[in-house]
Length: 494
Image 1: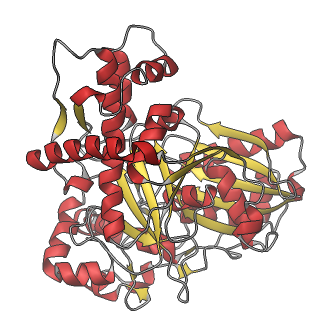
Image 2: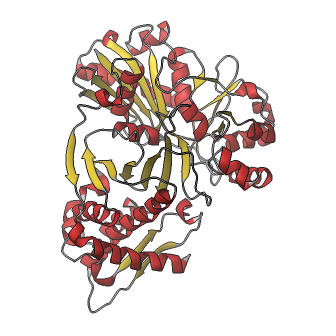
Image 3: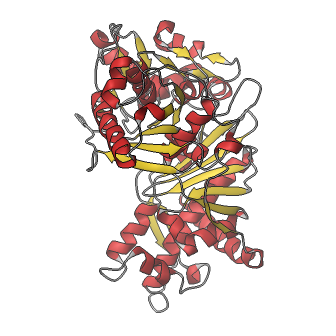
């Protein structure tokens, strides 16, 4: 008996086949093999053809069935993870009316800001828990104003994961978590945000039927089953945006637990057990995968643009030519905590929402030409990235999230002992590293939704924990002293 998970990303579509009994992934594949194209017709635009997601999903499905030798009829449930905040528009025949406007498209910023000002900050934050911003609702407002001929044909709007579920099952539905990431959910009233819909002039019929995150959301159609090599009637039983799903993949469900990634950019995603928001909109709050009317579970999302991209810049431009990342980590470890007074603000990859959309650039401070060398710069870069995480985690703690444990995959910056030890040391949190990814998590989410697993405890009982990093209390003051110096530089700049 198998579970099939899909991760619909902007660079590729990944599929993983998981043995339900052992919880182990038996095969994974992704397509395309080179990064998927993003259409940028104008500056700040970013679009993709939803048909390309479906094409790559078919290829990935065929690959995992071939690699594993599994019979597709033994797949008992399907789960979907997807790139968040996108907009797909379909007509009554379920035909796509225009390319999807994806997460990194910024054309709708002004539409969200005008709504924020017109509806009022307090109303938006207390009901939506965010500014309308550049999320799905604002993107639909752009279509309504700039492409009225398209808007008039729309029968339903959906997120990328909703579209994939529709292609599999023929049913159009969505989730509370999905609606919240699009700014369509009113947390105070527990329903679709009528006041925002009315402000934009959206017909309420555009919103699809709402299904639970873990539930039967449709069944694979006969023609699709033949195309994919699956059984007709295989249920789709889970879907979630990529960041809530990443948290699920790392077994993060409860208040005080944190999921983190640290690739080119970094994400800290914490679970809150109370309805709350940041009054300055430096972080975003959405319904987590296990949020219900009876149990408040909100995902607070912090995104830091300047993360691994700084480390890679140091590798290319400061470290000796040809050095590996492991060797760069060794260089960084040769100097003490605090980098002998060197501090780096890592914000050189565009405007940071955490800094209220300021674009400060990256700064190197405290450099002494007679004392410091590339080792100090290497460590200060990694410390600066960690301190940016700590700055955001402080915001989360102000919102009532007690940060006690950080879950992450053993990848990217989490491969560095300096990075890991500094993060544990400055936050006081235990770091647990796991072997998992989004498509595997989606498969296990499907197992929960199908009732194959009783709950998330059973679903993730076999999740392999690779390492545990405990905070070194004897050196806490050194980490905090370095962080305080870094924070003072940041606050002086902003």
